[in-house]
Image (cartoon, rainbow, N blue to C red; front, side, top):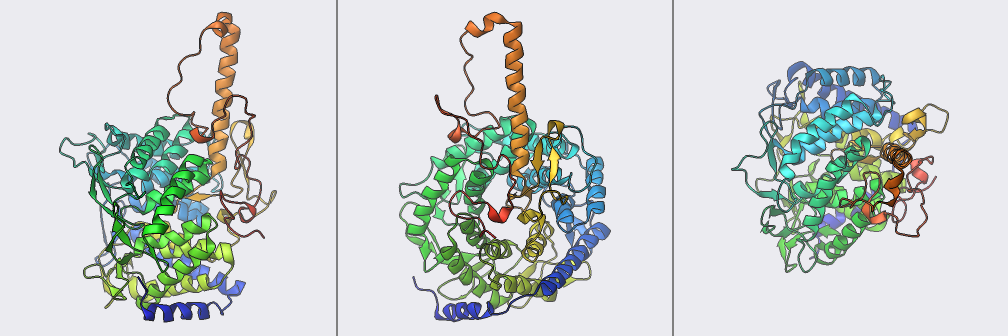
Amino acid sequence: MRAPGCVLVLVLLVHDAAARQFTEGEMSGVRQRIKSMFYHAYDSYLDHAFPYDELRPLTCDGQDTWGSFSLTLIDALDTLLVLGNETEFQRVASLLQDNVNFDIDVNASVFETNIRVVGGLLSAHMLAGRAGMELEPGWPCEGPLLRMAEDAAKKLLPAFQTATGMPYGTVNLLRGVSPSETPVTCTAGVGTFILEFATLSRLTGDRKYEDVARRALRALWKTRSDIGLVGNHIDVLSQKWVAQDAGIGAGVDSYFEYLVKGAILLQDEELLDMFLEYDRAIQNYTRFDDWYLWVQMHKGTVSMPVFQSLEAFWPGLQSLLGNLDDAVRTFQNYYSVWRQFGGLPEFYSIPQGYTVDKREGYPLRPELIESAMYLFRATGDHTYLQLGLDALESIESIARTPCGYASVKDLRDHQLDNRMESFFLAETVKYLYLLFDPAHFLHGGGTEGDGSWEEGGEGGQCVLGAGGFIFNTEAHPFDPAALYCCSRHAQDRRELQDILLNLTQPNRQSQPPAKETEGPPPGQSESIALKPGEKKTPPLLSCPVQPFSARLAVLGQVFSAT
């Protein structure tokens, strides 16, 4: 299928936009505007909506949406530190510890609670040292925010108690899964747990979280079609596909994202191999002229020739694997849609070059800005800064209200909706700011001795915060060095226990070894477990002492070396 001619013209205009070069002074000025945007939204939430989950910016009040635990505050916590506000980070972290309770009779989305609440708390915990918080001995393997994250994750575990290992989509935080709960959930709702749950297991030493996430991933992997694709919605009990549309957008997107990011964060070849096999099928059946369509998962025939705004994460994901040429071309297609409407409509008909009926809205999503951030880091092309400035000005002119920023109900006439999703502060503003701050610590900015690195672990033996951060699908950054630090100390403790037991029980050595439980220990991925006779080598991210810009991804460069 050929892309419309008008889109091709707009792509040429994108190339022209690259001619503008932003000075450091201009970038600093944009960062200040982004900060002002954040605080207008954040202060409005505190003034009018706290302790509800979200702000309603048209009526200046609040509403509970995903679980009644001050979701916007949890989601925005690490953004405060990204913007440099350590004082407010400390205040909010203490406020959450005192006020948030997960023992409530509320039906919560397993997927959303994981990425926003568990992910947000884990990220804040790993950033607590940089934020100047008082740390418990042994941090990052101990800490109140880590315990809160684990408390939230425990509430999700009943959803995974199925014969297949694939979780239900909804769980009651007090009572578990309702007997009447539907077994049908989206693909992303099965495959978007490995980052948060593996991080939790490796920080706490409790392997059950990573185990259930891996079991779900492997079960989902077995359901792919003969041509290598997965559908959109699946029955987690029967493993039968209920919606058989295959694509990279809504309902599927973060599953593919977590295979790649999980492979990098955990140094896991199994996850990478899964994604690469999927990618071959995606490129073969769904890609047309650098657009990605929806196809029937068994036949590969086009079912929906549309672009969904959630698909805009894909160029950024491609850049992590070094596929820059493909990423740039696809981004140009998506940017042409932004320039047409001043935002990305939820659905865009590629043949017609226009919005799809009843899918004309833009809830201030971050995905195109996220991809711009990755591609600017990879290429240095100021086209991506221009997209960021376009996004900032569009949101300010269309979505700003006296009480925050409102989702756009219809991009054609700029009607607004009475909702400000928590991801606006967690993702959209954060990625915008990071796009214009290439020296930020999350990009690996800073050098040894300037205070940008931290000590952690038992006796301060670990180097933390040196780069290589991986963002979950809610833009919460995870430090891979923290995972390795806690896993290493857990392994050391196990080895010491074995030595002591052997000394106190001499006959123990002659006993046959106990049967190992299935799967690797929390500090080691199964696919890279040592085989008999192999020598132990440290994981690639065991001691991240290089700037992020100098580190390589699993395939190709994450960002060009400087």
